[in-house]
Length: 240
Length: 334
Image 1 (cartoon, chains in turn brown, purple):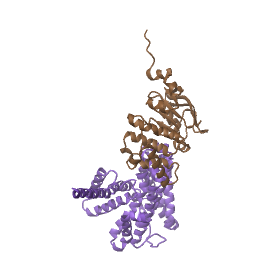
Image 2 (cartoon, each protein chain N blue to C red; image 1 turned 135 degrees about the horizontal axis):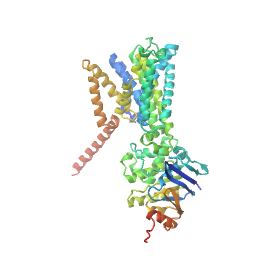
Image 3 (cartoon, rainbow over the protein chains, first blue to last red; image 1 turned 60 degrees about the vertical axis):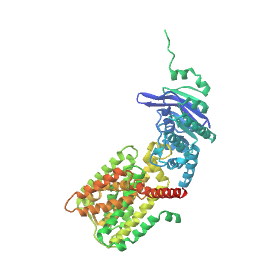
Image 4 (tube, chains in turn blue, green; image 1 turned 120 degrees about the horizontal axis):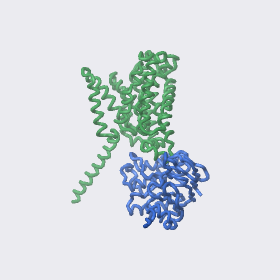
């Protein structure tokens, strides 16, 4: 078990965005998190990565309590994340973007550059390395997000809708990248709306609705779970 | 080493010209302009580390400049401390002030840092005006003209010129180092997006503080040079808001976040300022009018400053040459 999320909650004023959610992820597993819009998935990521402090509960990573630590500390411990709303460093080149991440482990500029080039090749951005971040298409910006997070050499990677907004052929290009990451020994938690992706790539799925975990299981179990179907399509209308 | 020289032939030439310049320029007005140019290039370069690379726009860099000038001068006048030691004291006091401002404001997002620098500069200016026992208030500080290397006071303008040149080269070397290492990359990341920078393992507050320490220290040292060169200054001249804005403008016009931008900016703004000031003695304010128009033109047509535009010119030239060559080949082939 690489990460354990235990009864984590987040309160925004009167709104409980995440309510006592617990789950574990095993090493080299791909865990999917799904749920309707506004279910609290991204907030959950923010709690794990330290972007927001938790209201209650604990996050344990590799046996160490990392609850509500600062994001840069959590990154140094080996958790990388991408943002659903992409945040490229718009005014600098793609290579420089990834080098910033690579400096997390690299000791020299040369080393950072070499590692960044390697990562760019892996995600298929090596030909665009000299372009300015803002000039990329949305698909490439998503790839850049993954590249930046990967460059920090994480053990656990949180992917927040890296395929939303991509067309089907772009999605097909992204899938082998994600599978390749797992093969290189990285554990992944992925938030995604595209069911085709979730079903084909995940080992296990956690379903969140109104901030609460309503189901957990293999893709097959989840697809047939009544609670989940209710959450997505609503309850059957009873005719009196 | 060789490839650096080869790559920067133009800069090498510029360096040689800069070294030999005082042999040919004897007019005090011209040397004065050159010294100010180097001084402003140094300060704008220091500003550039924090503002250009780190995106923390300071409009109160006179804080460090003025503190540097006052620290070394008061030590010299009251205790006879050599301004050489004053240089270190000035850097230390400026850095302390920088940390004092950065500590609370670097944790905030938005315009608070900029506002704090303006406010702090005003407070220090007023403090220096009213704390007459220490600073002599608006009577200013008058350093007696006693030339000597240990006093850092020279008879010849050319000596000041070389002193300013050395200081500028040191600042250039520091910026060059920042540009090529982790610090520079991290600062640029912070400028572009703080949240994203933090999730990539960057201690944002720490790196802003590093930029602040370098920037404030260098500016403080430049303040000492100014004091020893002018031999007279007062709160209004060293803690002036216009002066703070001019420092930022030089870096913005030249190109923020570039190594040579501040030098380019200073090479345009300082002579322009001096020429305009002396060309319209009858029409007071005319110099500001023209100065303003030039700035508006530069900022609206080259929002990233002049340096990025200049860098593109040789590339364009090369690609045009290639097109011509391939074009002529086609002709011969047909």
